[in-house]
Structures are given as C-alpha cells and as structure tokens.
Image (cartoon, rainbow, N blue to C red):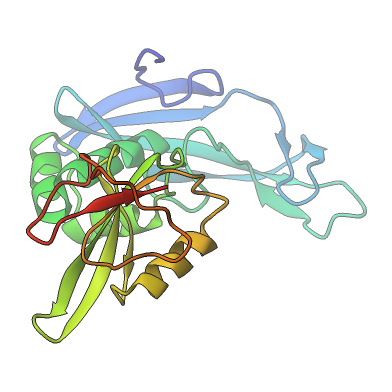
Length: 240
C-alpha cells in the first residue's frame, strides 16, 4: 500500500501554494507535464489555449477539511483527422472528468458507506472532516462496481415468505462467503433447476443444501444431510 501524500498524485502534480482560511486548508496544484493527450484521438498536444481553476474536495488533514485548487490547461489538438479542436487536460489518477472530489476522497466515502450505510456513514464522515449527505453516499454505493467473486463451492437454498401463508419464494446463499446470490420468485423445484441451469458456467458443480424446495430434477440427493445447510424443522439434504 502506497504511503499517503499531501498531493493526490505527486508523480503528476506539483504543489504551488498552501494556505488556510476559516473553512480549512486550500492547496493549489498544477500538472507537471508540459503537454497532454487528446481524449478523443490520443495525439500529443503542447499548444496551450487557456487556463482555468478546478475546485475539488480532498481528504482532510488531521480532521481539517482540505480543498484542492487545480490549475488546469486547455490545449489545441493539432491532429487534422481529430474532430476536437480544444480539450482540457485529464488527470485520471486525481479525479474523474467533471467530478467535484478527488478519487481518494470518493474511495473513503465508499468504504464508510459500505460499512455503515447512508445515515450512519454521513455522521461518521462529518466527524472526520469529510462531510457529505446520506443521499450522496447511497448514490456512490449504487454506482460502485460489483467486485468479482470466486464461484461458490457450497450453496444453500431455502424458502421465504412473500405473503405469509399464501406466496413463497426461494433465496440462494453462498454458505462459505455468507452472501446472498439470488432471490427467486418461486420456491418450486422447477424454478431452482432453471436457476442452476442458467448459471452452470459461472457456478461449477458444488454442494447444494436444499430446504422445502422439493427434489430438483437431475440432482442426486445424498443420504447424509449437508451440515453447512443446517437442519430445519422440515429437514434438509444435499445434492451434487
């Protein structure tokens, strides 16, 4: 893990000034490189068109809010085949285009949001000097990329009540990772068999604990129950 630095990306940013005000610390930085690549054609550009200041929220310093003032240049793209004549330099390791916060601040928000949720996460972030709203945290969580996970080796399937006594569905759980894989609208054996058939590639042959879902077509039930699936009042078994 890289050591924390005052500037988000010291390899590509240089610190120009540092000052403080009643709202925290203001850090002014600019790109180190003389030119930039056009985001459309990828050609290298060195002719500067203009400059502007981009304002970004960044990680706090000892609980004090830090605001980054990034001096950004606009360049002329001299490639004749390129449709874009003027573009602003990109700093992908610092912030996403049009974003108002640095990537490392967004990663901190996501970590707190996944751990605590919206309301509790916003309260903790406010105390740590990274104030944001619960709605912003929830939007980040919805947009966050789903991490790739290994194929389950032990799957548990049980029923759950959509309307108690009238309608039931089935829930599929990874017994080793303790996470929900899917929720089925029907608890019948046909629905479970269809789910297994549709995911035969991403879910290789594994142990399956069944409860109140009936016999799944094509599954060989063992004599001894699967201990990982648990033994409910209605009993459970395992199939391969």
